[in-house]
Length: 416
Image (cartoon, rainbow, N blue to C red; front, side, top):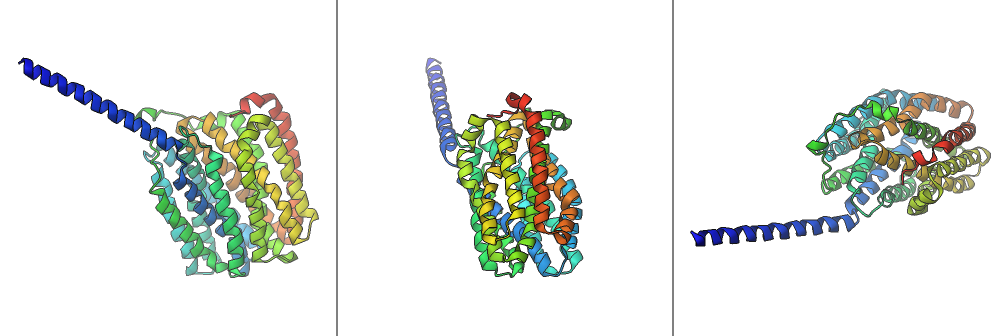
């Protein structure tokens, strides 16, 4: 009997030691993972933004090459956004409720790649209209969902979101420059290139750690909490003014740009300079936010953006226009970094994916839906330079209103 007790006691001690050792090993592995740079996420940003650079930069030039007028293109952009509106809301809610968030994004990668290749089936206006709508419904939600997954995986890591997001900037900048020269005004090649980039994202996403919502965290949280957050709504409205100019610039200015001496190569360089200017900003944006504060930094970003749009009106030399777009770097980085991180820190965890979707919904979707046709009309009948003049005026007014509103909320709006 005593021998059996001794054996049992020895077995329990051995089990405790083994369990303790395993726990320590697991802790060391977790610490090691936290210190290791998330290369798979970095490469996903590279290829997803490469796909965005190829499609978004040249799709309107493709439609223009088919003989569609700028007003017809504006109609495609505006009306297709209604479907995008529904998909944004539905996918945001689905991602917040699904057990493994990664599966939603993987499905969107596959659907987007297949839709991109489907453009080769027809060049008729209504077919292109339908495919453009379907592609955006699948592709646009990928970006905020990727951000949501990345931020959750980085919560216990020493790496900042800006360092990982830099992969997107690199992918966009390099791709848009190279593809611009490779295309040689043959814009039909953008669809297989986009499909390849998205399939690479799909393959890489299988190597990313799964983001799960534990059962104990499935609390009943009202989606009205997002709308009730007045500070978040204030930031999103100011971001809307910035996004409006960016959407119109990306969709219509390249069409105007080729009429004043640009070509596919010049368009590529125009977008390359804009994206490359984000790199130094992403390196130091964390320190800038801490030193200046959210409100002063965004106010400065508003001023810089307004100057950029005014230069697009006054300048008519393709080289000078290309160089002036380096101002995009600080403006875009400041707005994107602030909104994404504010949502990640100030919105309940159960609503973060929906919060990121709401940001895209109010910015990208609302801008395209409400002002897409108007932008196409102005660009066709008044010129792309006049369109950007109006965007400069809008940005000045929005910055003044934001400063008046935000100076009394500096502490509340600080997220670092």
